[in-house]
Amino acid sequence: MLDRPAEAKRRPHYGWDAPGIMLGMLGAGGALVAIGVLLASLRPFPLSAPLGIMLAVAGAVPLLLGLEMLEYGLGGKLRTRDALLDLIAWRGDEQVLDVGTGAGLLLIGAAKRLANGGRAIGIDIWSAKDLSNNGDAATRANIAIEGVADRAEVRTGDATRLSFADATFDVVVSLLCLHNIEPKPDRAKACREIARVLRPGGRVVVGDYVPTHGYAAALADAGLEVRRSSSAFGVTGALMWFLVADKPAADVSA
Image 1 (cartoon, rainbow, N blue to C red):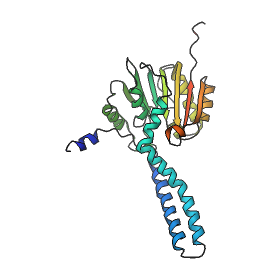
Image 2: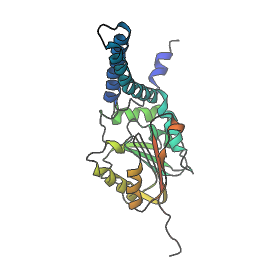
Image 3: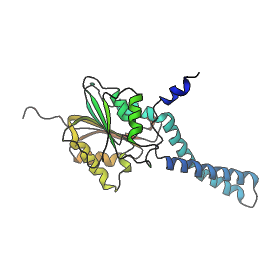
Image 4: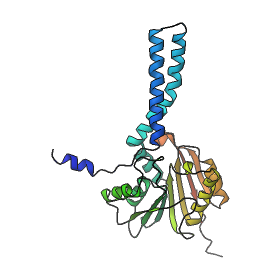
């Protein structure tokens, strides 16, 4: 019994995505639903019942979205991570880049699938608006807790200006990152950078809560072959789209 608090401290914490938005949706949606139910039930003035119903329906939308974000933080992100990483045929020796690593969810998940010289690097600009407690120290703590410090590392880096040479990585992954890039045209720039650092024969896997078709177009323009750009709600149980693209292997016959 005395050891339980110590054990709890050793569990990784992967943060809450867009915490301000989540709390705003839960608070505003919950308040509208509560007011609507009270008006419809108590009917303090004429037309209060239909007004209450309209308020409750209007509040249900952000409330449900906020609850979905809450469930994602509690366990949905682990399902999403596993589903995303399962789209890669791992050998174990891959060099992996996680763009927008945050608390290291994908980075650590990928590192657990590596051996034989494989290594994963995560980059981020560490925005607290995008993820609670977002910082390299928290990510390094998660790496240590998960036991992958020998094959995972984090760096501060911008997705639109990757500090890696061409064809450095076998795999590039990213989850809930690219939609945060502003201005919007820079998202295509980030996709071009991802294509640049990917080796021939390598694979890009992206997950985002917005449709990934724009990323797919940018990667295709950069020479990649898009295998998938579609909703993954049925797999993850979360509002999510998956993108898979491959860089054609080098022509060794030339």
